[in-house]
Length: 178
Figure 1 (cartoon, rainbow, N blue to C red):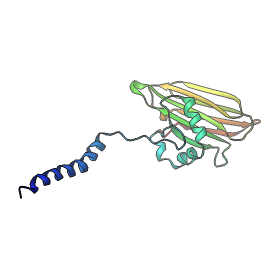
Figure 2: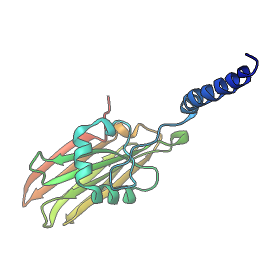
Figure 3: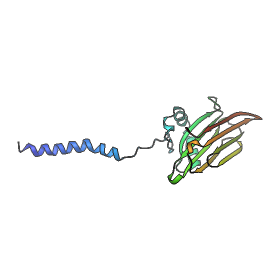
Figure 4: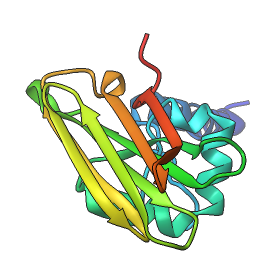
C-alpha cells in the first residue's frame, strides 16, 4: 500500500490541476470580442445578436471595414440598415464607442447602392449635430459626435433624393435606445 500511495497522490494532483485550472483561467479571462468576418471591425454588443446586421455585415465586409476605418479607433459596428427597405437603394452603417470618463462616440456612414450620383444627406445628433450633404456616388459621411452621452441613443437621419422626391427619408437611433 505504501508503494502506490505516492503514485496515487501524484495522479490526483495531476488530474485536479488539469480539470480545475481551465475553470480558474476562464473565470479570470475576458470574453474575446467577435469581429465581422473578413474585417478587423468588432461588433458592438447588441449588434452581435441582431440577425439583419450580422447578415448584411457578412455580405458587405469591405463597406464595414471602410466605415470602421473612417470612424476611427475604438468604434464598433452597431447597426446595418437597408434603406428604404429590402429594395436597398442605400445602406446605413452605424458605429459606437464607449470610453473612460465619458469619451463615448457615435459615427454613421450612408452608402449609396444605386451606382449613380445622388443628392444625399446624413445627419447625426448626440451632444451636438454633424451633417454631410451633397451629391455622392459612393457614400455620405462619415459623421461623428463624441462626448459624455449614450452613443446608442444618438439620432441619425439619412435622406436620398431622386430629383425633388425623397426616395429615402429615415430617422432612427444609432442602436437600441430605450
